Every structure is written in structure tokens, then in C-alpha cells.
Amino acid sequence: MKSVTFDAPEYQQDGRFVVTRYQYSGSEQSGWQILREHQPWLMLGPGYRLLPVHYCGICATDLARHRLPFALPQITGHEIVVEADGQMAVVEINASHLALGQDGSGCPCCAQGWSSHCPQRLTLGIDRLPGGFAPYILAPQRAIHLLPAAIDPVVATAIEPLAAALRALHFTPPHEGDQIAVLGPRRLGMLLLAALSDYRQRHDLDFSITALLRRPQLASMCVAFGADQVRFVAQRDGDDAAGQYDIVFDTTGSPQGLITALQYARRIVHVKSTHGLPVSGMSKLDQLVVNELALLPPLDAADDPRWPLTLRGTRAVRSRSIEVATLDQADHWLAGPLRCDGMALHPGGALIYSGQERQELAAAIKQRGIALHSSRCGEFAPAIHLLARHCHLHQLLAEEWISQIPIGQIHDAFVRARGDNAAIKLVMRHGDGA
Image 1 (cartoon, rainbow, N blue to C red):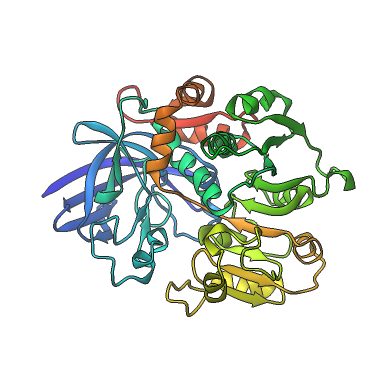
Image 2: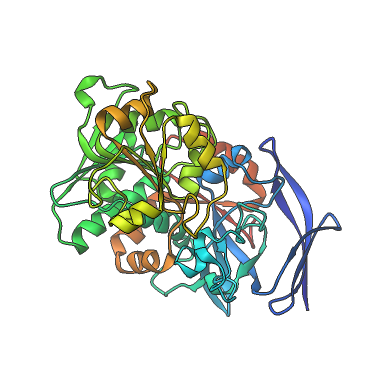
């Protein structure tokens, strides 16, 4: 049996960090007991490995954690670089049946290839499972990816958000001749620009990539990450901006960002933000993203490009879509449990909006036929492969994008991350000098 005792910054409901004593005891084979301040806190079954953490990035989900529907206090942080078997490694965040090395055939989500939506999962640094702002984590044994020598361990903190960017393109792939925009490129949005540029090259497609931003100081960085051009936007650009882009990826992390994205979109808005705030008549839009759902107008053809790629085809559309007449009804479905057996709203499914409400979101869907897509975390292997073969991107991340801060300064780092107008990724460092 192994046991470690340590102090870690624990995130509270009021957004503060409080240094708290934790102890992890157990083994990969027998399971683990987690004590918090010497009292039982969480019991885990087998399939977790105890690993030391070297680095952990701060993302928008961490900043909004107190507004999200997961219990606090918790040790947060999920963009994690650890040491495993004497090598640096990264860890996917969903502790599903498959990630723990268990038989997933009895789980409808794991059995159908949706293990990231496994109803039994814990989520590293987000939902119950303590995260990487601690000096140790309990990592699902099959979620650990050893890093190739070409990737610097500090830069590897970008793999989790890069995987999330690639996941967006899995649901909403650009087509030949499309005009694509990324709204609010900063930490995640810069990686989405890079992912779009790589996608265009790999698939030999001709589509344009525009960065929509308000801060002139980010323009050169947007171009370096892959944008063809930069456009500066006001809070509301007026009717001249309506329908300029076939697909707008909203990475702003704000309710107003979605309204702006709807204004610019001609066909699809893809939402990547989980900020925990109500938006245009909906209070559960975060659950749309967490469950990777779509909110769509009534569509005639199953191959309409406004369907997410995962829903193309008559059978998938019929089994994974539910009609709603109001945004309140949409909230009701989003607040309920998902099912992977076709009996209720399915991860990757869709709500079909047929109402006549006047909120910006409802009007964009009903009057202009805009489709709302969403996605969250993605598989790490493609992101690792992309980063390992793009020396320019790796160098850009190392020299322009990442700033290291000792873990003892996490409070100041969060203050800076919330107010920083630049696209700098703040990475907490454990170990010497922390």
C-alpha cells in the first residue's frame, strides 16, 4: 500500500484558495482512501495510479469553477503534466470505466464510444476527483499518455486545451470555401486557430480563418497561430456584421460573446465556453457544452451541414433529437440526466427548437436558421501528434504563450488570469522553487 500526505490549495465556493491537508492511501489494485483534514473524504475503486505533478495550467473552467454545478471545496486543475515510469506524461481528465481499465460493455456510453460521458465517471480537477494544483494526483491508469521527447513538459500543459480545440473540429468540420471565424481568441482560441490551420493543410481544403477580437495587441499573435486575417469588433457591430461567417467558434467565455457570435454567423455557432452564467433566456447552456449537445432549427435533410458531424444520417438524427417549443423546455432537458440507450437526450444529440420567442438566441435559430453546436474535452493522442510535428507551434507556445508561476502563488496567478488582457497561459509549477 502507498500513502502520501501533503498540503494543497483547495478551491472554495467563494473563489478563494485555502491550504488544506490531504492524504491518499491505497493501491492501484485495491483502491484508494482520500482523507481531508484527517477525515474521510472520498473512496475510489481500483484503476488509479498515484503520480507526482510537475505542472498544471489555469483555464477558463478553473476561473469559473465556483459557478459550475460541481461540489466545492475541491482541489482543482486539470491541464496536468505528471511523472510516470520515469517519464513526463499528460493525463486525460475523465475517469470512466474504460479509463480505469474496467469492462465497459455494460455501460451504454462506454460501449458506444462515448466514454467521456460515462455516467459513473469522475472528472479530474472538476468533479470530485482531486486535480493538479496538488503535488500528487490519482490518475486513471489508461488515461496516462507518455510524452515524446519532442514536447517540452511545460508546453505539454497545452495538450488538454489543444485536444478540446480538435474536438470542436470533430463536431463542426469546415467545408471547402467556408469562411471561418474564431471569436475572442486568447488561451483556448489561439489553439483553435492552430487546429484550424492544421486541419486545412491536412485535408487540402481552401477556407479562410479570421480572428475576431477587441484587443489590437493580440493581432500579431493570432496571425502567428494560424489566422489569415484579423478583424476588430465592437460590442455590437450593427447589421453590417450579420451573417459574415459560415461558422463562428465562440471562445470568449462570456454570455455577451455568444450574442456577438450569433450576430456574425451565417450557418453555425460552436460554443466552447463553460462560464456558469445565464445567456439569452437560458440558464443551463453550460450543460449543452458539458454534454456536447446541439440546439438546432428544424432541418429537412439529415445531411444538412448544420447538423453536427456526429449526427449526420437519418437514424442518428431520429434517435438523438428532441423537439422543444421554448428555451425553458430546453433548460429542462439540459438539467436532466443523459441516457446512452436512446430513451432520452443522448450525449452528442440535439434539441430542435421550434418556438417563436424573441431572445437573441431564439431569434437567431428560428428566423435565421442558425445552429448552435458545442463540445468539450477531446482525446489526447491527436493533440500530442499535432504538437510533436509542428515545431513552429511548439516554439510559439514556449516563447510567447506560457508563463510559469510557483504553486505557492496560485492566488495571485488566478487574479492575474482573470484580469489579464493578453493571451498568456499561466502554468503553476510544483517542486523546486514552488
